[in-house]
Image 1 (spheres, rainbow, N blue to C red):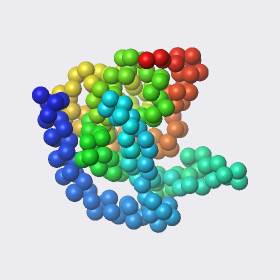
Image 2: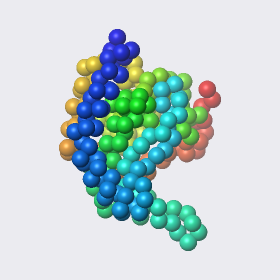
Image 3: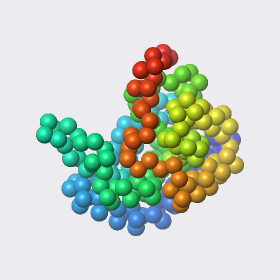
Image 4: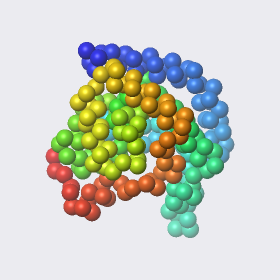
Length: 210
């Protein structure tokens, strides 16, 4: 009953209330990033959601579009602005995802939506992570986040799916608040820790056919 009805009910109303409360911060960050980025303050990217349906995730854009002489983007570490670094350290870049939750693309708690290009690299068991809506935070995020190896991270996603309950979601939410306050397990520079799933598994010749 919780998964079929109440989880979505709580997601919508908590996300809506949270967005209204955080709207002054949302507007302030939007204005600052619009000026610093000389354009849009938002970052949109296609991600697979429930049943692998593709949607556009929205986050605050914390990196500029600086390119080298060949027109290629500079490394993430060089494009990350000082304000962007602060926004990532405090997890404020996640605020716009409340709009994804309100719309129904995401849940507050669930497996994080990863890149579309990772889809062929999940095992059948790991693919269960897409049987529910992806979340802003999840079991893997409060147990190491990007500092986990891929096998451990994806296994935690599946364990969450197999044991969804109101109490588990409350525990994950409280742990998330603690981690945000203490800035635990936050990788400020995108891609600075570990290799992408597709590169790691392709290199190890563990491509999965589903």
